[in-house]
Structures are given as C-alpha cells and as structure tokens.
Amino acid sequence: MSESQTEPAAPEKAGRYNRSTGGLIGSMIVLVLVVLGIVAFRGAFRDTPDYQPEHIEYLDLIQSVQRVGLEPLYPPELPDGWFTKDASYDPGDRPSLDLVFATDDDHTAGLHQEDTSAKGLLTTYVGGGVTEDKATLTTDVGTWTSWTDTDGDHAFTTQHGEDTVLVYSSGDPDALRSFVESLTDAKLPEQ
Image (cartoon, rainbow, N blue to C red):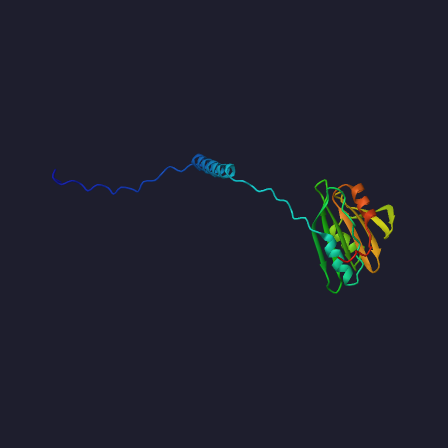
C-alpha cells in the first residue's frame, strides 16, 4: 500500500459507562434524599387543619324514635366533656338505634339497641375476645351484664323489651358504669 492510501479505521464502539454496585447504591441514596427533601419542603408550607367532629343533637333522634312507638334507652344528658359524634336509627325489619359519643378522655363510647343476641352485638361492636365479668349492675331500666375484651374494652348488655341494649367503651370503665346508670327510657316531651 502506498502512503497516500491509508487503511480504513476500525469502526468505533458505542460509549458505555462503567456499571457497578456502588454506583447503583449511590444513585438510590441520592434519589431518596431528593424525595425526602421534596416532602420536607412541602410539609414546611402546608397548614393542616384541626379537625373537630360535628356535635350532634341526639335527643331529637330519640324523640323521633319514640314517636313511632319504640322505647329507646338514652342518656337524658351527657357527662361533662362528652359529645355525640354520630346518631342513627334504622327502621328496617329489626329496628336499631346507634349513638356514638366522644368521651372526655378522647375515647369512644357507644350505645346500640336492636332485636338481636347480646353475643352478636358484642362480637360486632366490641370484639371476638369478650368475656363476661362476674359483676352485674342493676338500674331503673334493667339488670346489666358486664363484659371485658382482651384489648381492655368494656361493655354492658341488658334486655329491654324485645331488644338487646349494648353500651361499650374503650375508655374509663368507671365513667362507662356511671353512663349506664344514667340511662332512661322516659318519654321526652313534645316540642
């Protein structure tokens, strides 16, 4: 070959970067730090509203239920610091009344009245690990059986006519006992 003729150059290979486990881990760390930085930045400028559930006037519901001829148990007034979070009545084949309260120690208490078994209500509203306490409580509206579950929740049940009434709470058992003692089925005056 002559000097004027040169041998064609070998085709160049495409560039490749060097892959390594260390590089992968480093990239993942950088990515996690970027995501955490974005979350922290957004959180610094976000104003989370303080949620306060609506307080419901449960006595209006009790009066409506009494008008259809039923005798619901209810507290004539709530203990200090308690308020009603939910109140509902289902007039179906087996009418049921539900009242849910927030207690003064930030727990939940409830009252459920329905024509069904105590065991069924306890399983639904308190939990599967419920055991009967030996103590009973006698009030103006009936004799109550006391229950406790494995999580420390407390409940009372009684028969009221054909209905079973369940009162339950995850809070202070003495406050629940006082609440049960306050229950009545007195007819509310028409307004």
